[in-house]
Length: 359
Image (cartoon, rainbow, N blue to C red; front, side):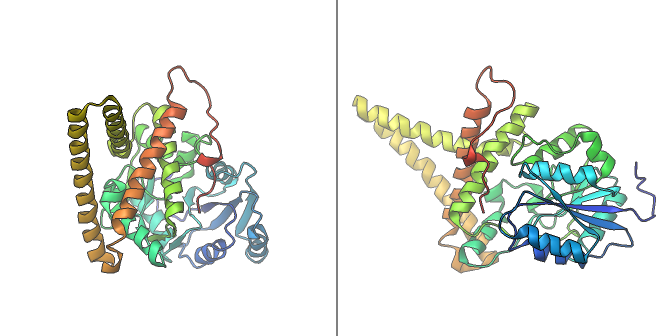
């Protein structure tokens, strides 16, 4: 166990799961090589999910030039299996995760280690900051920074410092990850949230520090955004099924909203088919009122985001907000149908729609 008061240097293992990241992995490795390591010995372990786009050849070139970079196979090709494979061979007392679609300030690693040691938390990280290029990428990044899109989680607040229920990526003591059993390999998505839920339920804390700075690159297409949050919603049900409680009740809101709309639509159809004119009119008025309130909320949130990120984004931000909500909600309902039927036990094997890469 690492003593928070111990000021000696600690070996660090940076773990990176990747698959077909030829366009991004070089920039990530260059960023790692330029990190301030604070006098700590370090290694970077890339778990490659059998890439076939030239990623592996690029990794081999970096490995040949930089002996601190290690490359291992991840034949299962999922993030959770890659993370566990890297943890298994890691030599560091501190393990820090990085992602290929994120850029990091040069002091990112040093800040993570200092925060882990000074707070005594089980996991530390920085807030989720987003940066993108292109019109749609900027619109998605703007919505991502809004509490209205993502439920007001603390890790979306770039100024918040303190205890949180989750943080992006993460930095842990190795013995913490070993004690928890690593990442759940049944979780194709949301494996980090599930691990953090296990960590907090074991009595440990998660600490967020705004001094830990990274910039996530969100999806740049609406279809990719829909697929991403559809899968997030779907796999959130797997986490709830495992732990029998949501990590936060905000995870239930999008599905409740989608289900309400489905119920209203079915009610309108039934009333129309049955010839119940007064009931049909009452339902239509109620549904219109609900949609009007939702549209007003989208517009208000869009104004707030556009004031911060640029007024040219205002016309499309309500659409982007609705994609965040409806895709997550629909995915959650599919997850309920897949994971929660009465009497269902054992492993569930979802199809490609729920597991394929969305970039």
